[in-house]
Length: 261
Ligand SMILES: Nc1ncnc2c1ncn2[C@@H]1O[C@H](COP(=O)(O)OP(=O)(O)OP(=O)(O)O)[C@@H](O)[C@H]1O
Ligand SMILES: [Mg+2]
Image 1 (cartoon, protein in one colour):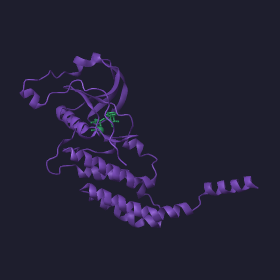
Image 2: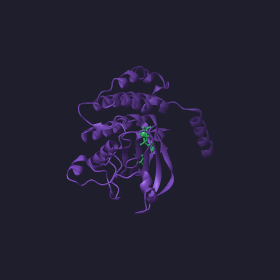
Image 3: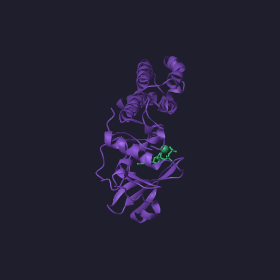
Image 4: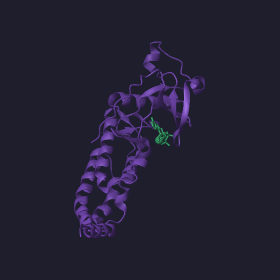
C-alpha cells in the first residue's frame, strides 16, 4: 500500500520569502541562476517537459546530489515552490524544496522511475492496486489543501517507498474542487491501458464500460469503485488464463516429462 517517502536529510538552505516574512522585514534577495551557478556541478539532464528542463547537479556547498529545474516559460515559480514545500512538509509526497530562485528551483532528487516508464511491462493484476495508490496520492495532496492540476504519469515518480508527486507548475490552493479530473481520467486510461486489448470473453463487459466509467471520474471514491470492479472482473479471467496452456507451457511440460523418464 502507499507509503509516503521519508524526507531527505538535506537541510533547506534558502527559500524564497513568503509575503508574511516580507511583511516583517525578513526579505532575502531572490537570486537568478546566473548569480548562483558557481555553486553547482551539472551531472546531466534528467528530464525535459513542456515547461522546463531538469538536471541532476551536485551542490558544491554540501556535496549533495539535487534536482535543478529551470522553467523555460514564464510560469509562477514562487507558487510552484510554495505548493511543493507545503506538500512536502505535510506528507512527504513531494520533493523537498532547497532553493527557489527567480529562474530556477533547487530540490530533492527523487530516485525512481516516472510512472510513464514504470508502467511498461506491469502485470494486468496490478492495475487495481495502482489505481488505489493513485487515489491515495490524490487524497494526500487534497488533504494538504492543494490541487495539483497536472497529475499525469510523467509527474509521478515511483520509488521503492511510494509514489511522489512532482511538477507543481499548475498547482494551487484548493478552494472548492478545482482539480483537473480530465487529466486524472486520462492518467487512469494510461494506467489501465493493457485492459483495452482483447483478452477473452470474461473481460468483454468490463472493456465495454471501463472507458465511460473512467471518463466520469469526479472523486477518488469513483477511482476506488472502478478498481474494485476491475479486480472482480479479473478473478474469473485469471482462472481462465491459468488453465489455458500456451505453446511455451506445453514445451516445458514435455521437456520436464522427458527429463523425468
Ligand atoms: N525532483 C525530481 N527528482 C527526479 N526527477 C525529476 C524531479 N523533478 C523533475 N524530474 C524529472 O524531470 C521531468 C520534467 O520535470 P517537470 O515535470 O517538473 O517539468 P515540466 O517541464 O514542468 O513538465 P511538464 O511538461 O509535465 O509540464 C520529470 O518528468 C522527471 O522525469
Ligand atoms: Mg511534468
